[in-house]
Image 1 (cartoon, helix red, strand yellow):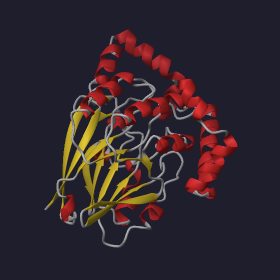
Image 2 (spheres, rainbow, N blue to C red; image 1 turned 90 degrees about the horizontal axis):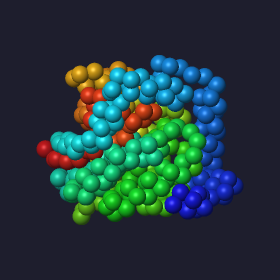
Image 3 (spheres, helix red, strand yellow; image 1 turned 180 degrees about the horizontal axis):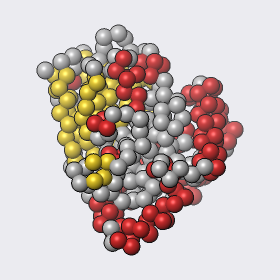
Image 4 (cartoon, rainbow, N blue to C red; image 1 turned 180 degrees about the vertical axis):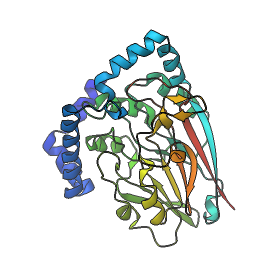
Length: 321
């Protein structure tokens, strides 16, 4: 199956041409160049305090967990995906979207979390929702091959409804974009899409990764949204919450933090690997007139374990008040 995915991937020149047509020349070239720069910097420097740099020492961490007997508990915890419900009350929600339900999946890391993804698909089959949004990090590692991630996403996509939207995360290469869209995911990279119900309309926007690549352009994402119309922003990381609020978005959905993944009792994260207030690291929050939600994600990163931070899929119920 992976060989079939690899065979479908375009050659470098063809890929660049397709990305230029899809994103524009500057965005395509900048994203590809920043990915290469990140990978070069990653290989040259290791910071043990940054979880994103743990790949080189993950075997030591894994060994320590196994030595204490916690590794197997952590891997089981990582497969216990929960359904969380978030009721979002909004005074300016268009009447036609009262009761609108969004299934929110984040940080699947499908190529390193088969158990969690399998449990996720079992749960999804029991749910009713209007659209599904994916807030990035489809791949396990932040560099290297991505064919296994695409194969995993093909299987996930087959379990979802017709309307699926997504953004890229800091673990995702822009080279994945053509195949993600070919499987029926409307990727939003600094752009927006209107959603219509009867005579009512709202807008769903999404931005490229802000955490590693600084490629998020909130202004561009909002540029086609008429003033005063209700809009939702998807971003892999919640770190751009200020830009999103000041751009007029009313609901902001994100992931990235994993809620800490390894937490102290009481779900107190050791680190969120993000530059933001800690109360925005998981679950619902608000900033000025904008309501936000940070998913702790489905998958696990670096080491497939979780402690005091169960993985989740989220149903957002929009309610007009």
